[in-house]
Length: 132
Ligand SMILES: [Zn+2]
Image (tube, rainbow, N blue to C red; front, side, top):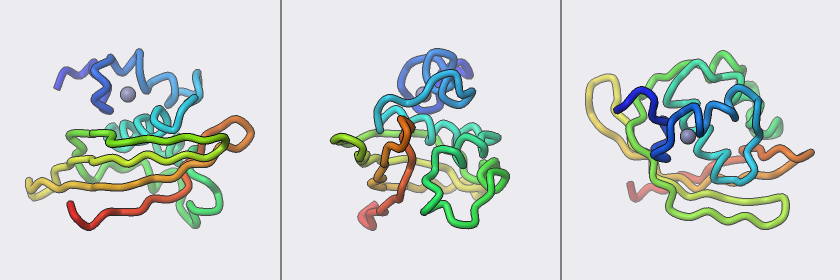
């Protein structure tokens, strides 16, 4: 992968895509933008802060930002299947592919729900599909 390319596979460069969200210069206007930027935060590692502050306090539980810094899986692909947004709530269904430490590939198929509070989209929870 071209290192300048955004890890969320938008075909844009990281500088023109998720970087502004991670740095706090811009905020996600849609649930899809937030979901993609959270995916790329996981893919890059070291963005625990961002994952923490875009996670709803009611569902992140005891998680700490530093727990989210680690990139334990190598995320290699993201496909957004559908997204819906209505008022202050929305959801995104996606398939993410990863490579584990032993080299085997895995698939994560999830429908995430989001809520917007004070103008900021927050990840609420994810429902994982078992078919993948
Ligand atoms: Zn991106």
